[in-house]
Amino acid sequence: AQSVSQHNHHVILSEAASLELGCNYSYGGTVNLFWYVQYPGQHLQLLLKYFSGDPLVKGIKGFEAEFIKSKFSFNLRKPSVQWSDTAEYFCAVRDDYKLSFGAGTTVTVRA
Amino acid sequence: GAGVSQTPSNKVTEKGKYVELRCDPISGHTALYWYRQSLGQGPEFLIYFQGTGAADDSGLPNDRFFAVRPEGSVSTLKIQRTERGDSAVYLCASSPQRGGGFETQYFGPGTRLLVL
Image 1 (cartoon, rainbow over the protein chains, first blue to last red):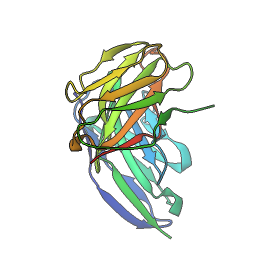
Image 2 (spheres, chains in turn orange, yellow):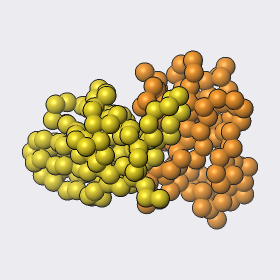
Image 3 (tube, rainbow over the protein chains, first blue to last red):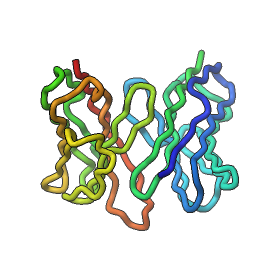
């Protein structure tokens, strides 16, 4: 079964700073990759997904992620964060029909 | 449209009691999943339904856990003889019928279970 590793447990940064969250999955082949976000008091929402094609994926709210097959990675980026990006971010890989999630990264953006 | 709904939003029970957690998926979604999220962890897979049948229950931790989906829509996760270690947020997700394997799972708000 797939496993997912997220490198940072908690990231604190100031508004307008750039954000990059690391995500690695355990083995190759055809993979479907996801980033979900959980804002305070809200449920998990899909931020973006990769199924095939262009390895640079654009998501909602200015987020993007790059799939690098040779590195088994799917890192999430945003050039300039806002206070409203404070949330917990989860990387996930689809293992047949089920999702395997990383432990999550809490992002705190200071105004 | 309406998303996945789960009830109750919070449940406090005593060790040894029986609990039922309900999930109402997005209308028309034939696939339904249950996950469990412990504090500081990502969600972990419990069980997957395609229609009325449990296609994979390999994530259920032991035989105290059971889930049903009798009419292919609403699902109930049942936990017998609850233990303190069962305390977690139980998440439900649904997705459209499998077609090419490219479904996205949509999550509900979860039920926060606390076993005292």
